[in-house]
Length: 81
Length: 146
Length: 104
Image 1 (tube, each protein chain N blue to C red):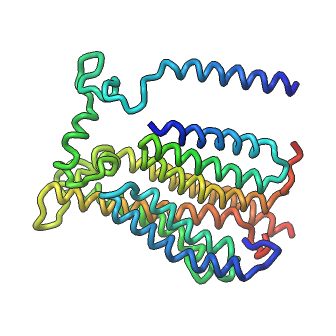
Image 2: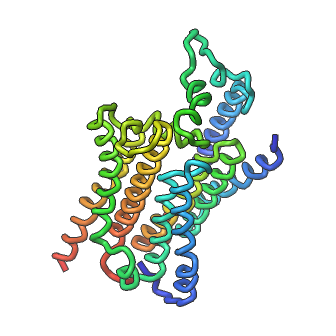
């Protein structure tokens, strides 16, 4: 129905996933994963599953981001990969 | 946890934002019968509002909010609230978690189910909030500068 | 080696996209999971939930009724799982912190 909007969201989803995998700075990777979760939540809402989208936005884009930031600050910030 | 570059603007912004997130969390829990949301999402929002102050203010300021020793009893209160609702319904003659047998006078069976669902959602919200704060507190080391 | 990795990923994505062409259309009311009867002839339980959720619990949000009333024991198990995860982080991470403080 809203296939143009979903196509734009899918393109940004793939872009954020590739950036999160390839970047050297781990803090940037955490922010990119947060953006990925938020775009997935937008897709869930567009598909009609509002409760699942709400859960994904709160857990994936909020609390998981905070916990990953804590882990990055307590270990090293650069990735060797 | 507190970063090495200490800025009062971050703390001020977090202090401005945190009460509204907490109020919205309670709204999501209480209003979950009519709009999307429920105990899990509302509890995660409550935990996010507490963790925002904790991550920007450090250990000394977060001691003014929910302290570390208070998280485990809150989680137990949430689980026991859920289990106790089911147990009271079972003692009064129904099945486990059958809210139509709750001992509240002057209510029909459907409104009793409504009230029972409200009680267990508050329980889920308390448990999820306490568990997420507990995980954060156990991950951060003892020093102020993490 | 990197070319092999990328080619395997592209091949797997092509297989997934080809397989997703056979899925039913999203939101089509003639789908099998929206029918009153399943293909084996039994009635689908979800149609009872959809028709009677408001009458049983006076709640317009159907998802809350299914999670909190019809499937409440499942939700209770979920909450116990979350509680156990919190207790495990308390046990594992706090022990290592105390040991590090003793060494210093």
